[in-house]
Amino acid sequence: MSSINKKRYILIYHYTRCGSTVVSDMLGRVPGCFSYGEIFNPGNSWPARLGLSDYSTGAGANNAITDLIQLLELGEAETLNGESIESFFFEITQWDVYRQVLSFTIKELIDYFNARQDIDFRVVHLIRRNAFLRYLSSELAAFRSVYHSGNMPTDTPKIKLDPTKAIIDIKVHLQRYIEFERALCNLVPIIELSYE
Image 1: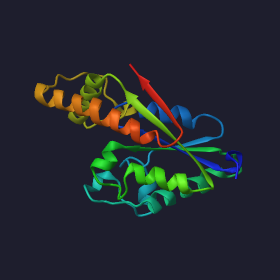
Image 2 (image 1 turned 180 degrees about the vertical axis):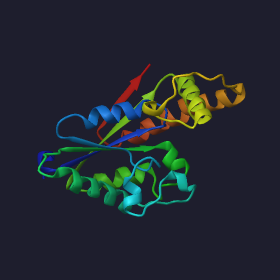
Image 3 (image 1 turned 135 degrees about the horizontal axis):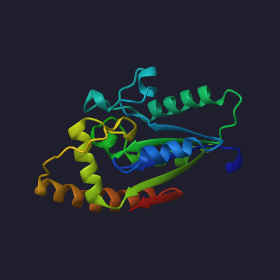
């Protein structure tokens, strides 16, 4: 089966606070594209509609690959309505993995899609190179309990940063969540999108 006749699923994989919402929204506005956003984010309605867990339920929700496929197919059925959709974008984050919202690893997901002859699977690996600004954004969002710019207050509160915690977070982000995930994502056709 040629890639022209396959449906295309594109995973946007990232480690949060990296501008993924903006990227996902832009991709969803392209004709022929549909974006689910962060598919297991508590603010996303897709999991609740199938009785699945998002990461607000705490560790151990353990959604399986079959659950993810159900979500993707539900969206596909609802968005087509005569419109020609060629590419379906969905986001999975390191936070989903860390919170054990998923019962599968990213490698297992990549292997699954690679084995599907009816799907053209790609990965967009989204990287925010300035690890300090990513950490600062994360701390500010946690302080405000507001994580997306559409709801962001205009004031800029003063927050205290723990230098030791900041250094650990930055090192982990640079060494593990960029280098390790970069190697993992290279198992499929990939676009690496980085900024700053």
